[in-house]
Length: 80
Image 1: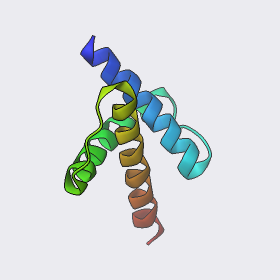
Image 2 (image 1 turned 90 degrees about the vertical axis):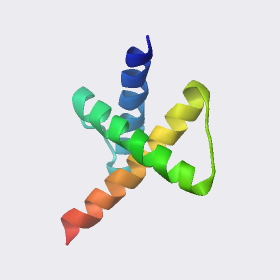
Image 3 (image 1 turned 180 degrees about the horizontal axis):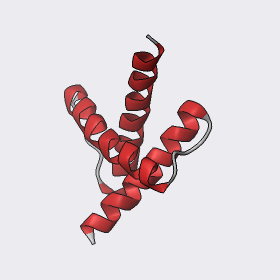
């Protein structure tokens, strides 16, 4: 069950971040990829700030924040 929840959170976080940053999602696999990597980035950033988020909503917020940061960094790298 944990793996399925991980994929669902990754997909939702990637979709939300895609809508925030560029106005649309990346398809189901793209959303999951962005969300999963975003969860790692968000977890790292939250730990640096001393923040913790638990449960489904906390994990979704962490993954979404990380995915938005990830997409922002990618957009800056691509524009140079």
